[in-house]
Length: 442
View 1 (cartoon, rainbow, N blue to C red):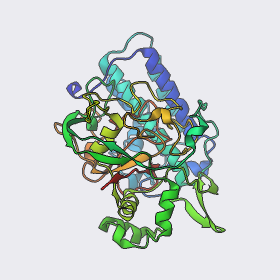
View 2 (cartoon, rainbow, N blue to C red):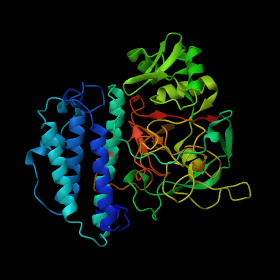
View 3 (cartoon, rainbow, N blue to C red):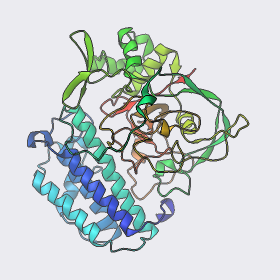
View 4 (cartoon, one colour):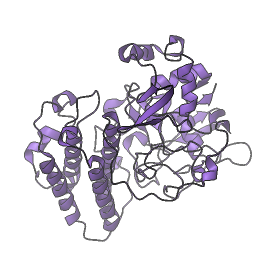
């Protein structure tokens, strides 16, 4: 199946550093949680913290130790606990899982066995692919643990990454808003390109799509902007909502975004276990696709398609009113993310002002297209033309048609994981994820 994968070779030292960093982040994502919190209450779509850590260890063992190296299972019974496609979500809550100490020992044993074979030099393409796959998978579950802490009102992790210098404070002053004019393209290349070090199967391959000229908001929608919708009766006026949105409203009886409340005449938001005044210049977060669409109808706007979103993030003007035949890996160019360009990796310990981090602007002037909040698009999640399954066959294919595409990453996303072509996907009713949105003109 190796014809289907995309990977460039890496050195053992690079992979070792990634594995150790991912392990450190995983421990941080559950650090300080009590035994009761590790066995968190059952919430739709959410797994227990303890299961998530064991599953991350099992996945690395499955693909690196067992598949790549041909080693026997460390824990033969682990398949019955942690194989997410053989153990349905409902069944996971009936399992008697190993204790915290046993789970962490399993995680550590998998890590040590993987590291023991990394003795220096360059890895071949196949080995690089599966090591990266395991690290990226652990990164995704570490991100999920962070927003699970938010869902359950757990304290923020105590041990955060060292914060790098942020943008000039002067950049966050002034009026927020405005659109950016994006020229169309008759053949914009949507998706991952073959020169990338790694892409997942749902990004393959870049293919030409026609995109008409459009106007997209320079920044994501803020809490202050969304508050206007709430106070205008947006959750009560069903004319703004799709049928599925109205069904969700009826079931949840929602009147405002998750984790908001009105207290003593002012609006507050819960960040982990603490209530704080609602920061009006921060992006609205933990809203689902239905809420995003309803706001757009109220505001006379719309969500971008994923092709529009990716073009705005990755394309460059050609100087003649069109789009140049180049594609940036990140909005700002080819250099990897830093805390001065993108709010990812927990570097800023939460969301930041939507006008911060001007160093991360796209060529057309869109801000924070990577980081801060995942952004809903208008498109359902479907394969690109010529889709081929990767060895991890269950990553994308089971979710085609039932999920919605999000782009851009959030403040909880791993810096090594995110790029302009990355396609995230969740069910449209999910508001536990750190998701927001930006709008386009009609």
